[in-house]
Image (cartoon, rainbow, N blue to C red):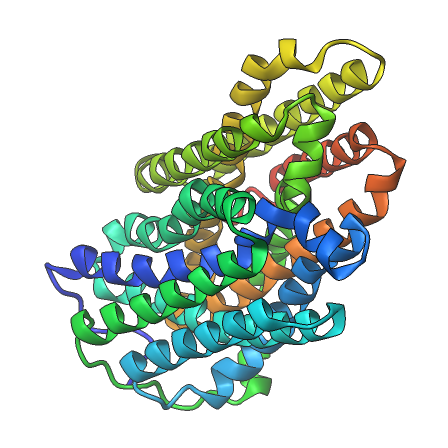
Length: 396
C-alpha cells in the first residue's frame, strides 16, 4: 500500500477519533507540568530534576519515532494505534507506582515509545483520509487532541494533584489511555499497513532540499515556544500566582492553544503556511518577553497579584502562538515530499520532540538563574525562529 490512502467524504469526521487518541497522548506527555512541585517533593529531587522527566520523554520520542516507524510499517493501522495506547496506559500505571526517581524516568521512556508510535501514524492517517485541500484542517484536528490536553488535561492534573496526589493523577491518565484505545478500536475503519521502508531510505528523505530546509525550524520553534511549559507552575508562582490561580491560568493557556491550532489550520489552507508561522513566532517572542518583564517586576517587590489579568492574557497568547506552528510546518513538509507523507510527518514529530527536549533541558538549566532569565532566553529563541523562517520562506 502507498503512503496515500483512498480519501473519504467522511474522513474529516474520522479524524476526531484520532484526536481522542492524541488527547490521551498529550495528557500523558503534559500532565506532569500540572503537579511538578509535588512530584519533586515526593521523590526527593529538585523541580529542575523532576522536570527533566519531560526531557527524557521527548528525547526518547525523537530518537525512537523513525526506528519504530520502520519496524511497525507493515502492521495494520488500527491494531498498531490501539497497541500504542495500551502501552501508554501500562507506562502511566508504572509511573503512578514508581518507588523512586529512576523508576519514574524508566516508565516515562516506555510512555514515550508508545507516543512515538501513535502520534505520527495518527497524523499520517488523518492526512490521507481527506482531500489535499482539507489536509491542514485534518492535521489541525489531530493536533487539536494535543492542544485540548493542555487545555483540560494539565489543569485537571494540577487539580487532581492538589485534591488527591500526583500518583492518583497518573492513574487517571492510565485510565484515559485505556478509554482512548477502546474508542479507536471501535470507531476507526480497518486500514492496512504500508510497505516496509528501510530506515536508511526513511532518513534519506532528509536529503531533499525542502525537507532539510524546513525541518530545523520545527526544532528551533518548539525549543523556544514549548521548552518552559514543563515548568509552568514554578513560573506562575514567580509571577505572583497562588495555588488557587494556577489551575485557571493553565486553563487559559490551554484555551489559547486550542484556538490557535484551530485558527491556524484554516488559515494555512487559505493563506499558506508562511504568514501563519511568521505571526506565530512574533507572538511567541512578544508574549515570553512580556512575561519575563513581569517576572522581573514581581521579583523586585511589586505585588504579583496586580499582574494576574495581564498574565492571563499573555498565557493565552503564548498557548495560541505555540500551537499555531504544527499544521503549517506539516503542510510545508508534505509539499516538499508529497509521495512520502507518512515519512515526513513522522520526521516532523521527531523534530517536535527534539525541540521540546532541547527547550526543556535549557529551561531546567536556566530556572535556578531565575524565571525572568529563562523566559527571556526562550523569547530570543522565538526571534531566531522568525529569522530562520524568513531565510527559508521560498520553501512553502
